[in-house]
Amino acid sequence: MFVKEVSLKNMYQAWCRPLTLALSLVGAGAFAQIPQHDHSQVMDKATHQTMHPQMEVCKGTNLECANAATPFLTSDGQLFLIWSAGGAVSVSRSTDLGKTFSTPVEIANHQKKLDVGSDARPQITLDPKGNIFIAYAFFKDGNWNAQINTARSTDSGKTFTAAKPLIQGGTSERFPVLDTDAKGTLHLAWIDKRVVQAANKQGNKKLGGSIAYASSSDGGVSFQPETIVNQESCECCRIGMSINPQQFPVLAYRGIFPGGVRDQATQVFSFRQNTSQGLPTKANDGIGPIQRVAIDHWKTDVCPHHGPAIAIADTGTMHVAWFTQGSVRQGVFYANSNNEGKTYSPPRQLGNANRNVARPYLLTFGKEVWLVWKEFNGEKAIIFLQHSNDDGKTWSTANPIAEAVGYTDHPLLIHQGKQVFLSWLTRAKGYQLLSIGQAE
Image (cartoon, rainbow, N blue to C red; front, side, top):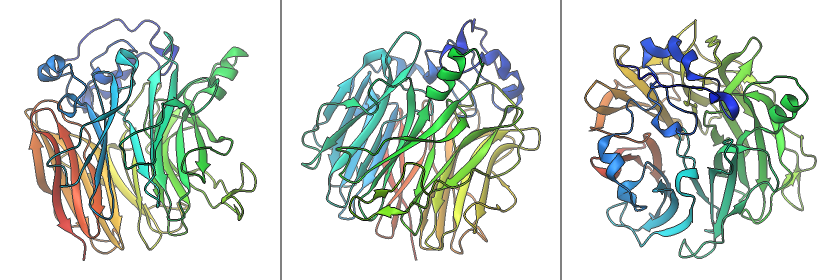
């Protein structure tokens, strides 16, 4: 595979060390080495392609020009979709499972400053009252420091509040992830740079970022003061979040361990709730220990741009899938834990080792687990599916369920009742919501 040579001077100013260090990844998928400011054009196992010609000529802000689309499907069949295209973040609603959409509502337009890196995507969630909350990131200065903006809707997405910063006067925040529990508490986590920037200002050179968390009991109108739950994390990989049966959030992310090793970690939150507000009594109450999913020993200073996926079954079993290029193992893997992350099952490799395998995603329903990932065979991207009906003990044969040429977004999974859907955006076929199975 051809690796484009481009100068990487000052690459690490904001988020990562020069990708010239990525030569260790060439055998696994190759990086097209490009300037820091254009995350979306990184070529590696995460994207399988540079910007496709079709993508370059699509200049609009509508869904057909989107590079990332994130769905939320309500119990009554309303599909809310948020996407980034042409520098804008837009939201629309479908009442026929994605066949047609309402006129998009543009939340904001940051043009070339919008964060459209391969692991960056706008986020959306709804609370039990039907209020919509969204979050996205954009670069706020020439040094590639980012800001997370949020907005809300109380009228089923017809109108939204003006986008506003999550953190007033923050240093740099990226890769927000959202979820809402059954009680209506909104959980938000992101990559935060305040700890790293403070250390660097004091002359203590520090790499990576930190994992920050905050929650809201009023649908995102206000948040409790944010908490840094891990000071050592990868600075350019998305975070996975799932709600456990006790209605507490669990995070999965690429942590930085001693020696500069970037392996996967999980943290279980078990807050002692303040009954009047539904919030932790103290900012750090209930923040569980950092648990390592597997010892992959990926020692690197480059940006993998490839975060993990997590889903938690009704049994409490934590299911995690991730990408690594460690000295112990290379590829995409799956493991589970039935003791809140204290120990994990032996990692199981996913996909065809002779192809580029990437972007795993998980969904649970009762004891059933649905797992998808993307493979690139040199000509097209293919989505594969595996299913387990016994909490991950045994799995079906991996079967292809969708394919496309050119640019493709990550495969995502959502459900309505017992019906499971693949949500997939591609340049060639547009946005697709494909029924892929029925839970028992």
